[in-house]
Length: 125
Image 1: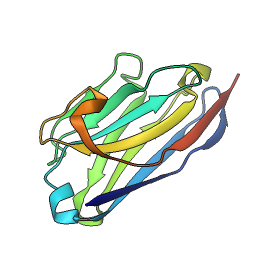
Image 2: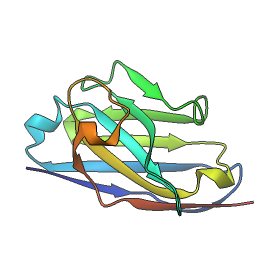
Image 3: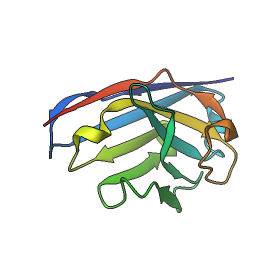
């Protein structure tokens, strides 16, 4: 089993930055062979793909809405994935979740096997 714990959420003004972290525990040898994804869910909205990173970190993929503003990275030695969020907008406000799944980057939530509990991001205008 793999446990994921997100941190780094908070409240910022529009234009500000936050860096989210997701630490994996449990079968960490397995997590280092998995792609990791970040999703978000705003009030009354469906969970949506934000971005993902391959197991090696060599490939990343982003939703169009965050391209150029968000960056995903990972440190397999520390079993940690990061989401650097810059130029935040009010519409970025949501609960952000990290997830671990198959070896290739996937954009659908059902393609991920393990999920964290989420961290709240609030952006004021």
